[in-house]
Length: 61
Image 1: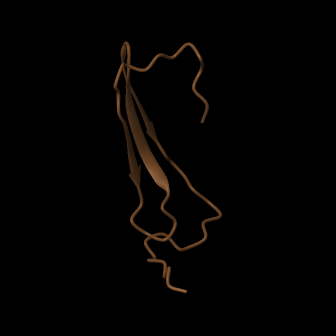
Image 2: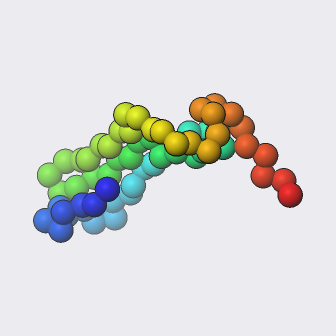
């Protein structure tokens, strides 16, 4: 995703990011305040994932 340079964030605005609780850690939703309101992004589809959706990953060596 690329924001157009004409979009101005509110001073001290926070980006909220939701990610899946599995091995993929896919960002599925994002929200940020801008000067005229807010922007919300939602992922509709994902493919080519490393792990099956919902599958926990083992990070031990």
